[in-house]
Length: 441
Image 1 (tube, rainbow, N blue to C red):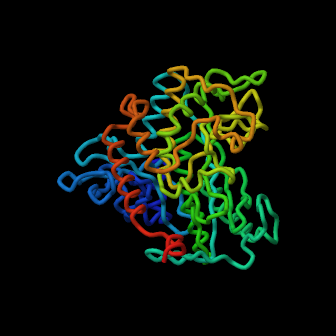
Image 2: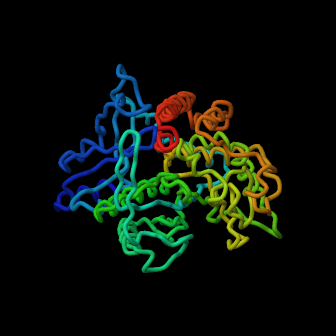
Image 3: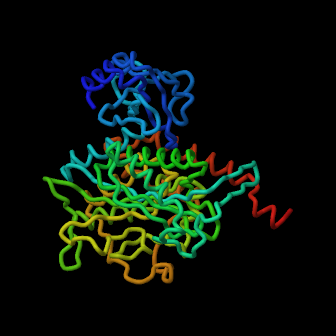
């Protein structure tokens, strides 16, 4: 929407509330809600926020910031009448400059670098959202209990299982209908491999900044539809031991002069695709600090559950970190990066991947030959992804120069990220877990 259109809808009484959304450094969604009568003011000056209350944003003595709506992202709230939702950008208090560490802006800067280096006009992406749905969850400080509905899953290897075993087919359809109503295109949805109620909704290609917004909206809609059905949805990477984990695989292609410039001829990738892959693989360990930023992430990244563990690429091989879909048109291919999960800050994770790809193209980093074997059975041949969050953070501390190019990421942002995540790692590592009680109590 543009300003004129919003004003007309306000005058007609169609919009009575504007909900402005923004993300903190950790990727949690925040929002501030204003009456439509304040629309002109918030478009001119933004809405004041306390940056010291947002993890990683500002100190108490310099805490005043502003969030201004980006009307290009406006969409009707699918659950509330008269509410217009819009993503915002965070600004420094008395400045017209966007806060340089604001995650959405970091991704925008990465795309602008892609353009300024004349690599591409944009990068397109889509995400595969995997998630579990439970009947209920009860959480205590040291214990948790997950409750399944009577028919929720129960079939070994539930990939594409049909009704009546796919008992949440109607719920997923409801999610897709709501997303389509707000112009977020969905390719398809299905029951995933996980026995006990694992699902996937796959979005359609869009410019990467839009895709980051769409992923955040989709997570909101999935959780809300589940709640309205007295169910609980989680994007936790590994909620159940012994069951497949949930990832957030992303597919990418570079868009230039109206076409996808990734292609393959006689089994060989062109330079753009090959070097992009080379950059991502070179930096895969430090990337993990952004794409897999939780302790639970590394409980998913183990062999045997279709999650990658080795740093390599392949054609049509789901055991690799990067996969070129085998059914793709060789004149126009995409690159799937399989390690990420939905605990990541979507904007920072995508920005980091884009920066790794840019580094690969600028420095012509070769990825080597694609893997052809089952990587799980030959894991010792390859360099491994980090096995813990702490290992990923250490990798980021030693491999960050590619992120700092043209100040897309800043030293402050990376230092804040490492500090926040190491505190999180320490807090979790110091607490007993249910299995310890079973073994030692």
